[in-house]
Length: 265
Ligand code: NAD
Image (cartoon, rainbow, N blue to C red):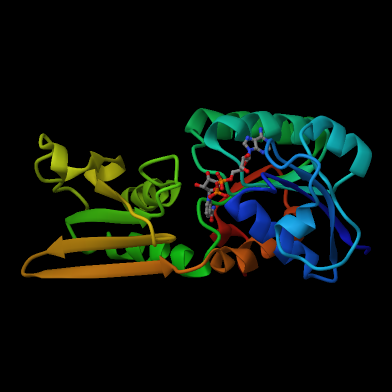
């Protein structure tokens, strides 16, 4: 098999630049195109701090970029309001997608499943591409079988546009849906400082501070004891092994797949 041709949407953003750098460092992948609304015309490699190589200018139109560069995989790290438009364009063109952007709702996932069916492309959506975070979510779901109460504190950089984070919402969902989940006691939720109540009555607290990247604590409480699970992404590099794995695996997937844990063997 030849190199995987990768288009990066959101290539000028914090995560997009990291993805550009990661893709350029792999021998079985090539950066086919870079799409963003900012830094149009600038070399995506230079923006990402990659030395040498063929320049790949940032372009604004995703449809044109797909037509010109024939990518096999699109990686999307854009914004909640942009992601579905991008995915419609890519999947309808038969381009498989690896999606890290947060903000996708249940209805969006149903639409993505249908879009995948139209041209036989696949779509991998992962609320968190860091292996440690995926394990934290799985351990939290496991622990939900033994504790009646849990709360989540998620901490991110100040540039994050959504709250609570997609990872926190997914964690709550996995804990509530875990087989034999005992989560039942949510505690009072009529006080503003108690955070937002998510699936399973789990309260989520969002902290936004400069200096942070992406962090989460799940605290479970039971009779006379608590269990704290904590994960810290201290740099955006933490997400790249998961993104690269997603790019390699998505071509062999069918339809919509949600969660990095579904492709880690
Ligand atoms: P950012 O604001 O730094 O970057 C977003 C980029 O998207 C910007 O450059 C913006 O110009 C661009 N953009 C906006 N609309 C666009 C469009 N229609 N087409 C192409 N580009 C467009 O944000 P970020 O910190 O890089 O985060 C991006 C997303 O990734 C967020 O939703 C964030 O929550 C999510 N995220 C996910 C993970 C994960 O592991 N799944 C990890 C970190 C961040």
